Image (cartoon, rainbow, N blue to C red):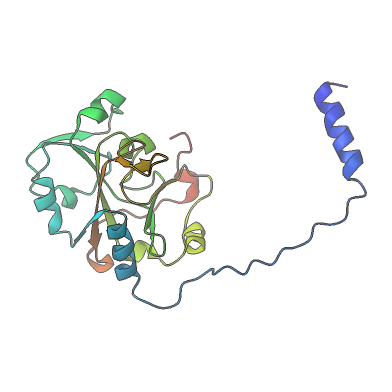
Length: 216
């Protein structure tokens, strides 16, 4: 018997007469009350110092400020309409040095949580690899209104737990013991969110969980 097998055997013996687990009641909210989730999300994002734009027509104006733009391979063409700068699709994968040299990255998201002002990426359609949104200093993220939920449990219900998830609550920021805020330490210094009405959205269908590559 190996050391591993011996340890597991001892654990099984010790737990043989253990009482059944006790179910702990969970009284936290699992669904948001009917309200304007868009406005709540906007309020939280702005409180985090993110910049919020409304409508796909805002994208050309935002991208006019960008010279070098990194994008996932499957970025919707409508998002790039009128862009005259240098486009850097992540195919083949851009190196960390190349990602660090771009002015911004443009992606979509998987879900947005109004109550916490959080945007979640799962490497699904129009999102690309995790590193794609962690290295560039500016992240421009398109959020469709039908991707907005009220609470965290509602977001988990839409996500595949096997996917690599990136949770974004405002620009990357931290502070030291004296509460001096420093931005851009763990990710983009600037976060801009473009809200697009679901009925006018131009995006690919979300793939089933088995198509999500957990290696990202």
